[in-house]
Each structure stands twice: as structure tokens, then as C-alpha cells.
Length: 501
Image 1 (tube, rainbow, N blue to C red):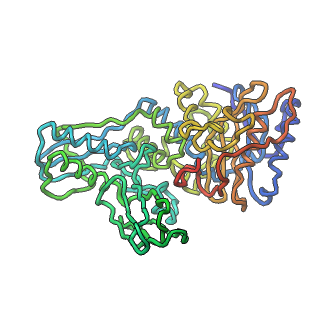
Image 2 (image 1 turned 120 degrees about the vertical axis):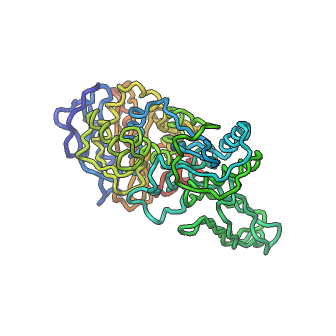
Image 3 (image 1 turned 30 degrees about the horizontal axis):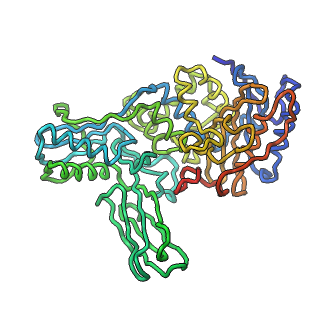
């Protein structure tokens, strides 16, 4: 395993650093002297990926909110503790006249998968059951993470977590529905509303109005607190594009059961009684149909490229199940911490309270991210994990991910792979980049408490400066082209719908 050096506080060159890197250190100091960071906090470390030797550090031990960089320890621990070939099963079983739908946490279950499961149930000879029972007991009943803001409740990136859920699309945004509102044919008509997947589990309260072509579009879509009533309100002009929102559901177990029950009906399986939620499947139950998820190594791509919060939290609870027989956040996070300790990360210097980084209770210094990134290079699953990191200016969404629009036309394009992180006043970028001499570097940039709308270009300037540096090159901050429209970085670009990266 690559050597890990103890990193200290301070700025600029670490003690004993190679004097040939002085120009690089000065260039990075200049980048971080940006006036937008005045009064803010920056924790930055760069190290040689092969040796672990520190190349640059500034406030290396300062604990800051890393936002979605929290997914780095979560994902690495999942690959080690669960294994790259780990899968989740969703099963249909019969016992005592009831049909049980048992979930184990698969975040990739689509309505089409529930339909295929129902078809298998019918093919097994089951055509009538007393009740449908949804078994989500592999995880506890705590649906939202520690410190998640109530402001996020209906936002899809704060979806509730359950061992039984439904994703409306192949980004696998589990626990959400897609709601589209189209203008009516003429002014005064109600908008036409479509829900994907089609389900009566959510109710539409359509208060919107179609207005004359050219008038202002003010249409909004949101879910009322504690319910599955989705309100469509405001105005949409004739011939305007549809307003489209991804909305989290209240109680994803019920959502999965409703989608499955509809599928059973389509395939001729009559459920006579009501649906029951949260009851364990009896040991005597007989399996009549099963669906296996994709392996974890494949899930890593939508998870890390698009910074999917639900995947992170499901992985955390799954780690809890597999390491402590408890599908809870606390058990899962103990498993993550144990793995981090085993590879040399000093867990006494950090706090992790969820798997995704949505909570502001997470505080991790850049020094520990660099230790993690250096150590995992020796893991047998590293190549698959590395490939799941967003690639600078990688045009395809499942290549570039949240870096798809960043660092274009710079030495970092197609070179830097890193995990992004964004919350209001918190931004981070940690990963790998190769410099002009072919030296691979590990870096972590965590910025907090700034007032500017975005500091992403400061992170990018650090990385592009590293990518362009070599024995025969000047170490200067690099300019870049950014695809698309620059937007404030309050949340991950992949969390903004339609996707902005």
C-alpha cells in the first residue's frame, strides 16, 4: 500500500517538499487567494499518488462540510464490505393465502421490473391472494437522514429511504415520480398532467391555468408536506414546453406496493384484501418469483457519475445489514468508519452522519480524503471504482457525470477524475489528475462559508494548474471553457432537473 505521510496545518509548501515544486505551490497559493474566498475557509491537499508524499497543503486538517465528497468513503467502503458483485433481490412469496413483496434495498427497481415480477407470479399459478403484504423490514423505518433540511422534503434528491422502492427512470432516482404539466389547448384550460410511472399512489391537485401564448410561465409543481398530494399551480402559456419535475414520494414502501399491485391486476392476479406495509415475511413462505439487481460495480456508474443520494443511503444501510445485521444508518456508518480505519484514515478527525453528504453534520478535512484516495489504489476493485468517478469534460452523462461541463479545453480535459460536492456555501472536488510529466497526483479541495454563487472555477483552476504543470512548463492557473450555462452551485448540477451536467 502506498505510503501515507502525516499532513499538518498551514499553507503553501509542506516541510521537506521538493524545491522543484515551488512554482506549482506559488501558483496554487495564487488560485486560493481569490477574493471570493476572503472570509471563507479552504482545506486543500495535493499528494503524489504513488508515494503519498505531500506536494501542497493549505489548512489540511481543518474539518469542513464536504457535501457529496462524503460519497467517496461511502462508495469505497461499499465496494470493500459488500463486494463489486453484490446484488439486491426483490422477491414475491406466498404464505397463508397472502402474497408478500419482500425488498432488500434494490434502488434500481423500475415499474417494468415490478411488472415482470407480477408476470412471474401469475405464471407460477397464483391467480388469487387474500392480501398483499409489503416487507421492507430489512431496513429500519427511519426514512430521512440525520440533519436533512425540511426544505428538501419534496425534492427528489432527498428521497425517503426504504428497502422497497421504485425508480421512475434509468438514472434510478428511486422513491420519486416524474410529473409533467403540459399547456391546455386554449387559454383558461387546466394544464394536462402526466405522472411516470402511472400510479394512483400520488394524487394530483391541478390548480394551474393555461394562459395566452407569450405570457409569463409561472407553473410550479410540489408535494404537500406529509402527503402524496402533488400540487400543480401557476400559469403556463399555450404552446409552451412542459414543466417537468422529479418529486419524492411520501412512504416509498407504499409506492412500491401500489405499483406492484397494479401490475398483478394487469396479469390476472386478484388481490382481494387491503395492502399491508412493514410486516416481515414468515419463514415458511414459498418464493414464487424473484428479481435480481445489477451488480454493485455497475450501479457505481449512475451512483457516482450523477451523485445519487438515494444510492448512497441504501448502500449505507446495506453495509449495516451485512456487517452488523442492522439496516440502520448508525450500523452502516460504523461499518464505513471501520473500513476507513483499516486503510489508514484517521477517523478521530472527521464526522460522517449520512452516506450521501446531504447533511451539514458531515465534517471531513481534505487530508483524510487524500489518505483515502491514495490507499484505495491498492484495492482489487479500484479500477471499477475509479472509472465511476466523473471525468472532466467527458461529454456523455455516464462518463463526464457532474464534471461533464467543466475543465474543457484545458490539460485536465479527459484527464482529471474526481467527485464533486455542492451545497449552499459548501463546495468540494477530490480525485486524481496526471501532470504534464506523467506524474499522477491525488487532490482534495474543500471550500466552505463563501458568499459567492459559485466557486467551482476556483476548484477547476487548482486541478487544471496541476494538470498543466511539469518540469518544462510554467505553473499558471489555466483558463477553461464550460459547456452550457453557468449556474449557482447551491446543489449538485446532477440534482437540478432537467440535468444541467
